[in-house]
Structures are given as C-alpha cells and as structure tokens.
Length: 253
Ligand code: SF4
Image (cartoon, rainbow, N blue to C red):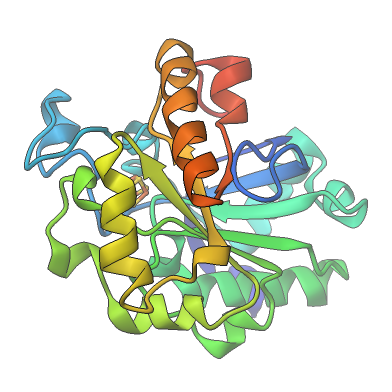
C-alpha cells in the first residue's frame, strides 16, 4: 500500500516561490532531508567557517540536516491540518519539492505523487529544485512541470568530481522544462559558468538565471547590483531572492 510508504522530510510550509522563473507564485514547499553536497565546504555545518575556496554557505543546512520519516498518510494528514495541503494543491498552488537534495529520495517522491493521485485525486503542478548531480528517472521526469536546477561552481567549496555530473547536466540541458540558476558571489563566477558549463554543452545559455549569493537583506542589496551588471552585459536573465527581501534570514516562510 502506497500510504504506508515513507519519506524523510525536514519541513513544509506554504508561501511564495522566492527564486527562479516562477518567483512570486504561491507554493507549498516540501523540504526533504539530506544532501549529497555541503556548500560552504565540508565542516561548515559544525562551525560556520567557510572552507576550500567557498565564498558562500548553504542557508538551509540547519534545516535539511535534521528530519522526520513519515508515512505518506501521516505526512499528508499533518500537512492538511497545518496548511490545508490538498485543497491548496487543488486550487493550483505549486508544490515545490526541495532540499537538501530531493533526488536522493526520487523513488519515494514518485511513490508519494502516485499516492496523492490515487488516494486524493490530486496531481499537483510540480517544481523540483535540485543541484543537478543526480539523473532523474523517467517516472519522475514525466510528473515534473519545472526543473529548477542549481549547478554548483567552485565558489561552493565542493570538489569538481562531487558537484559536476555530466550525465545529469546533459539530461537537464536537453530538457525544455529546465531553468538553471547559478549563485553569483563575484564577477569571475560568470567566466566560470561560460567556460565550464556553456562552452562544454552542460548548460544552455537561454536556460540560465543568475541569482546573488546573499543570505541577508544587507548583502542581497549589495549583490543585486553586481548580478544585474553581469546580466545586462551578457544578455542573461536575473532573479533576486524574494524571501530574503521580505523575511531576511527567517526560514520556513
Ligand atoms: S546543494 Fe543546495 S541544499 Fe545542498 S548544500 Fe548546496 S545549497 Fe545546500
């Protein structure tokens, strides 16, 4: 029975999509537990000190590192109680499955989507946010409306063999539902995107959206300008971080 199957969840909440091409759209966020990267450098989760050339740190580590494993039925009941989950999805609110790295649990995601369809007659408008290091299954791909990928640069502090999976990047580059968001901390980041991703056919220029690396409002306002300049000079799309603009460093909103 699908409803007895389980999935590891760190948090869920109803808000607005804060980044990327659907920025501003009402969305339920389901943050799954665990990630295969540690942006900021291995060890940053213990003391907050950036390592291995990282210039920014993942702002959700404290959330995705912990979690609870729920049966599909318990999770759905809890979300219904707290945020009227199924009704929101049926009204067209997007479901954004994020992490951590949600594709670590991709079989469970497919099973949960099947459960929503069979038990609740609900097939949501689905966005999946991924670091693009894992190739999605066909079963998952056919249910996804928007792939929001965020390939990582050197500025993440992650070694190349961990953050670059060519098979996964090719999969997303060839998928017309992909938008690839890059976090920019410095002007040199654009050069790296050009040489290491676009020129190698790992990302298409028209799929790219640049976003400032900023986990506070103060930093965001500074970095917005830098990213805007890069985008104007190179005919690229930019997005800011709506949730940082509105709620600053508060998570779960
Ligand atoms: S891949 Fe995403 S969730 Fe994982 S550590 Fe990096 S920024 Fe955080």
